[in-house]
Length: 214
Image 1 (spheres, one colour):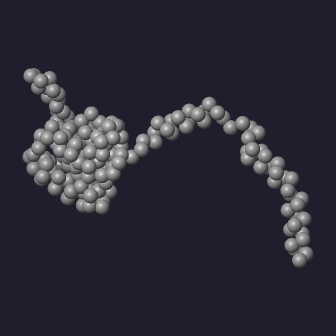
Image 2 (cartoon, rainbow, N blue to C red; image 1 turned 90 degrees about the horizontal axis):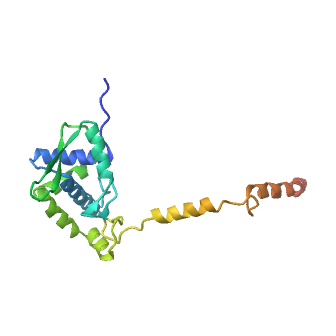
Image 3 (tube, rainbow, N blue to C red; image 1 turned 90 degrees about the vertical axis):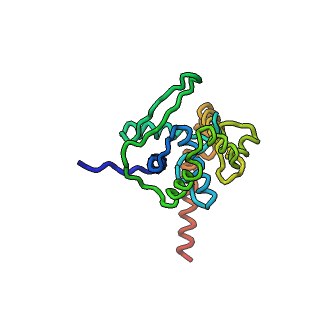
């Protein structure tokens, strides 16, 4: 039986964070996982490194978030690496999803980023989910997004203005192209180019003969 492939990318980052939290006796739910991973990416960029999570961060309902994390959580759960425990507060109705690492999967992850994750956990791992949420709102990327008042923008972790979202513009361009197909006699089309080359064949041959005679 072949050994399972090691985790990479976002899956490796999540698994490592959960493993480190487990070692330090920290309980991690979805919100804490998201915010701690964001803070680790932020610290990596601040040190001149690429963000280690491998996800894009956007300003959503509760601060920085990435829909990719939910997909990775599902994949890890289906592979048996994590278990999600759902509990509902009988007084507030608030639903918490605690994430437990069930094994010790092999990961391929940058050593410097693991050190950053460990440092973030040591500094912020004991904060509650709501405290972490409030903390992330104080970071430069979130401050820039809030200042512009636009949710769903992609955050620039270096602290600059949010990146422009090219998705809607590209969708409009594709829609226009589908409704405006290139006509067959469009100048510069392939048929016109072939015809022009054929017209110049004799002239090219004459020029070649003249050069050879020289």
